[in-house]
Length: 326
Image (cartoon, rainbow, N blue to C red; front, side, top):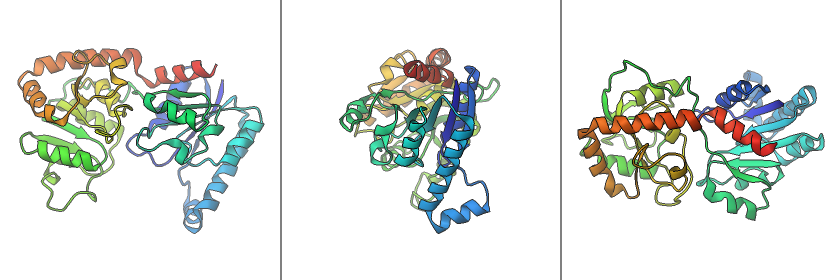
């Protein structure tokens, strides 16, 4: 199949676009990529003058590439940059269209993009499928992310330097919970929190990196952790939807403790491949136990790694998507 893949420029901590490109190529497909990065100073100036005209300019480039490539499938990640007119023009050429939205459940796609126009629409939350159907989104499917085994992998010989590691973007609930936990546990952190937390925040000394980190840097950090702590930003608001860390930590062979989401039980076996908590009050006991019993955590991590490689790579995800489309 000939596929035109459109990737966004803004997903700095989750650059799955290139992972998707690689996975599709590994499956034997011919892939052309349109990247919304600003390619030169002229484009940056055009964006500053008028963002609306800049997007129109970029969408004209997309349409020109469509005419040149003549793909069987136009596939966009997020699709924030594509207006309704662009999608309609692509569809008029008899080309199938698909979108993979990855901000559910906290930021639903129909608020930002013409999700109802795509022939196939995928999101990272099973719990939001009914919402999309209500808004006339056709062929809405649940499709979580995964890992690239060449990046998210165990690193033999790397020493376990840190008790507990957290990597991810800032959110008020994350700051509150981790601040409380850091009073009793050593938590090492990475993520763009510098402008979000107070100058005298006790968390500042916990960071090894307060900027956006690369997938490789994150993988190295996870390999150095006895425990990788996962807390979805929508904890306490929605019981469904899974984030990329769920898979990435497990792909690195790391032992993970995460808040529970409805989809997880079908992805990993609770208690055998991952440890879950329903309430933050449960976390201190879990941290204490597994820091004292590292062998148990390592056994769980080994099972999670096996499951991830068997079922949760980007190759698996792209095959699932294409099976649905075909």
